[in-house]
Length: 267
Image 1 (tube, one colour):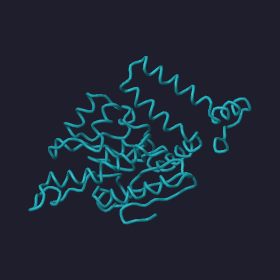
Image 2 (cartoon, one colour):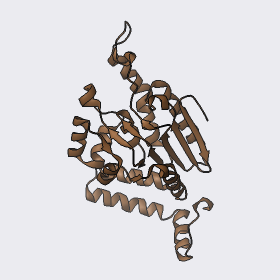
Image 3 (cartoon, helix red, strand yellow):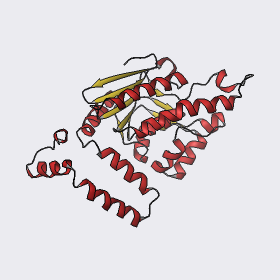
Image 4 (cartoon, one colour):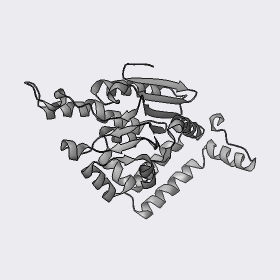
């Protein structure tokens, strides 16, 4: 699928969704969010796909929401806040929910700056990789008097801690990719010319895993954020007792005994 604002390519069992507004550093507007959601709907409908990569065209991943007079000004029908509320409710936030609820793993390949809402999009993936020249900037508070959005305030403190999340949000300092990896904000910083290659290898490795594994791990780690230790131990025990009876576990055991890679597609 190729649209004005996004492209969707299929490489065997891996889909690549590319934000395609390079002339404005892939800044977000309603049309791009709509096109991206339509692309994700196609990914959901394709049961053969086992992983998704999200990246940006050109020299940026995403420069955040498109800043223009329409966003900032009121008119006779709506205030600026009312218009933004509708945009976030109808387009931006559902896009993040779509990514979060996708039944296959999502890899974000950050190929340049991720600023503002672009940070929220980068963190919406299960695994985030970044090129060495990439950077992350939260300009909401110091430059615009706003709060980080698209899930940033929910995900960022969980990844890097409250102190670092607070300082990045208040100061708007540029965070380079290597530091982001060192802090645990992203999984890995790679050389620029290797970014898509590493992202594809990561996606292919995930595609070889049992299809249900991503959902089980997501759910377990989410519950761990609110469960106490006993509750989490009980949850782990309950899930293991269910999962051990699946054919995928038997295939994994057989592959281990036979000193070969498991093949889950056949079970």
